[in-house]
Length: 319
Ligand code: FPP
Ligand code: MG
Image 1 (tube, helix red, strand yellow):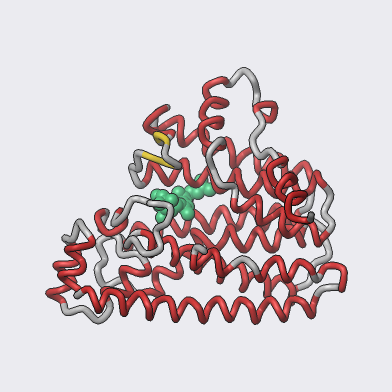
Image 2: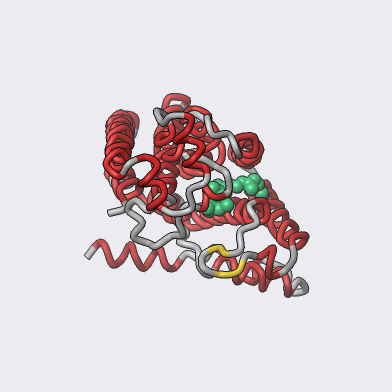
């Protein structure tokens, strides 16, 4: 009985509504219609999952969910232009459909709305924290640029980028629902920061495996990172330990068969298994942190912990 009720509530939350934007901007509204109609809304679902046990008010949930989805989608509008990507969520990207200039302006406008909405609400700590994660996203993107064509890039360098680019939003989803209630606890926020960081890392590493067609159930296009000269986290893990000759052959691979020939099929599978083992340890660490979180919460908020514990396994293993 519980499950259908929750599903209904999730579907009811509308992140993008034309009424939130001026009707005298029809092109902007059309662009947002395209953008928001097909996203999975994972981050706003995370907010909703937090909001129940914390008994947030509907207007607070809406503000938080809209904030994180606006920031995420603004970053995608800009990212697709930076990456010159032709498709996003199986649709032509905004910069190709509307023009690069207007895709940038549409992203900027979403960020401006975020600041208008949050400053109207008036929680200074939340405003400041939100501005910081936008800054993190930009730093991550700038650092990533320095790693393109670096075939000796280390996992630590990539983790730094992913912490800024990907994990920052997950951290926000865990921390902002507590910040909006204005009962700040340093210890609690440090723990949530750690847990959000681990979720981001697991999400990114799993996404990076898809690029090598590992557990790619959703049929995502493969080897995009490698072909654009970027060793992602699994690519860097795979390359570590290869001879310089193998590494330079890896750069030119355009199919998985070619990668199998360079690395060896057995070795490739063994590296996937080792990578999984390392990442499973991060899942275990996350679950351990979740137990510590339970000790910091009052009884009535403890259901939050079991919600949070359900996240990392499907996020990484995709099942
Ligand atoms: C997707 O990365 C993109 C991001 C996670 C963030 C991109 C951030 C910026 C472009 C900075 C600007 C930020 C704002 C808020 C305007 P990806 O290219 O690795 O993944 P993809 O395959 O989904 O494109
Ligand atoms: Mg991209």
